[in-house]
Image 1: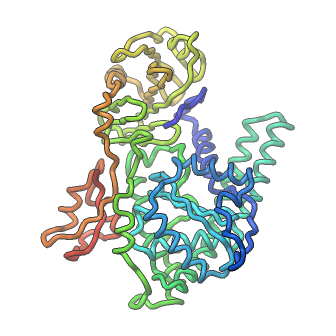
Image 2 (image 1 turned 135 degrees about the vertical axis):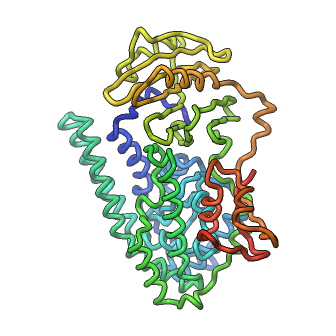
Image 3 (image 1 turned 180 degrees about the vertical axis):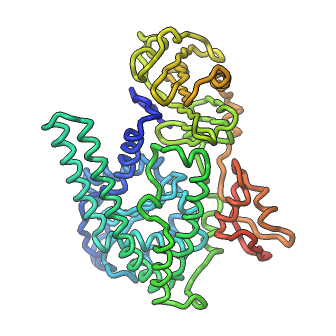
Length: 497
């Protein structure tokens, strides 16, 4: 969660939410111009590092993209394993001269993408979901295929054209809203266009994986697991609430039955299911053991209904029945019905403006001036007010915490007195955390464990530190179907501190 200066809140504005999603997704669609690198010879000096080959513009784009996904995730052991996989894939590809560099992104999102210059990005969330080196190879080969087929460069050119069109409408026609809508529509068509390219990238990627000696059926397994994970997320309260974070891998890589069947057909061209090729689960699971899972505590994390930010030093607990999601812009929450929601973010409020004045300043429409009141929450200056729109009503709080002001905004289709009381009680849980309390915080991690003689999916799922449905999450995380039997001594993944 980052400070958000002057942002308007719009729970009931679908277009605003769509535009926020598309802006983030546009990071994955845009890219830099191709880098022409000369292969080194024995007599040549050591080749420059990847960063040294970037132009200032390319470096800025790389840094902006990495920052939008929570920064780079530093794990030399895991990075080394990924780079070894890439080296094998490159040698077996149609472009063995193409240089690639993989960056692990410190994000729980399930995503991977490539830029025209050979930069490949993969999130730790995606790495946590894969089960063996063949599944990892299928993802990397797929993204390499986009570079080989020049898909990324095509997308970059079309994004630039979409931005140009939106600027013409905004500047010449003098209609910013219409320009933004045009850009949104253009990017939606771009996403559709990229989906049409997926089958080509699948075919190329499966071929690269197979020729490199990996099990070509890894693509089918990973697509299936992603589809199950997406289904689990969609059935949760937050799955029905639009997120402002970058769209996940399935937004442009849909795991449809048709696509999975075609990937299977591609794999059969290279290997039979009974002799598929390398599928090293032990090496892969050993490499990801200890991988941070879910939110990084440095950016705040969620445990059930509680949000805790040890770095900033505060915590709060959502009302009963809420599910929370921590994004780079805000903490979002919703109840199971979708009729109630919340948002917590940070803004700058000048010292000469009181919090009551800020709530009345117009950053959200429909404020009832008579409802504005100043108060103190656990020792912190605060103000609260009610705002009403056509579809949603809001109970808003502005809380001054050090040099920051936090906005805690509750939304409801029907703001009854009882619901308003619950929102007030939740706001009163906003408090400072002690240094001792903050130091005890530990991130959740992927832990690989050996299956014991008496272990079952149910007993291992009971050890998972997850908010709900531990068995379902255990099965998806390990690529297992309901009713699966575990083998003594094999490695499986659980989520624990």
